[in-house]
Length: 200
Ligand SMILES: [Mg+2]
Image 1 (cartoon, rainbow, N blue to C red):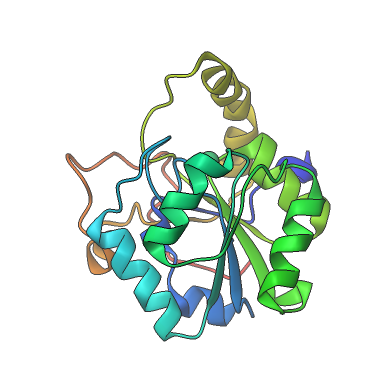
Image 2 (image 1 turned 180 degrees about the vertical axis):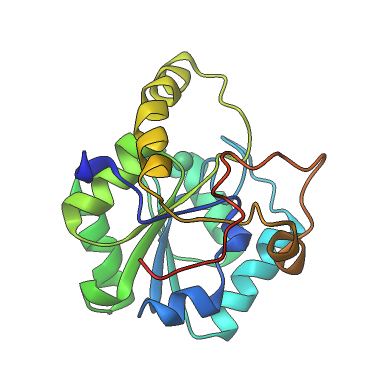
């Protein structure tokens, strides 16, 4: 089960802070696109995500996109945000993550993957031996295959919570500091979500 377990869970990508990254020795991020930086299949760039990317750059965090989706979907979005990208990178295979890390010129010990899916992103990062910063999907999935995967993710996430895994961004103060939540505030996924941060 450790191969599927997230390192930490964030409500939105915008809840990942430079302070968190610096505190964990992370100097570079490999970024998933669908349901991480934007909604599945969308080219929309939300202002808060654009601001977050800018903040990461200003803090010296290196960034690259690695998506399992096709180049015709990934390339326009990558151009829009001004990032290099790898499309069709076959996560959970570690090969795409290796190539993404090499493209940034940083050691594996300084890289983390940001993504929304357990069976591609979390498994891939764990196989490659880097932290996986899991984000809550930006929108509920409609594709039957992904909906099935979401069902299968539930016991893994429940186990993560039961073992006291860290969640960031459900604390209203923190979420509002980084980005305005979209729509109605969501309830904390469990009673432990609002407790103070502690080091893993
Ligand atoms: Mg995704």
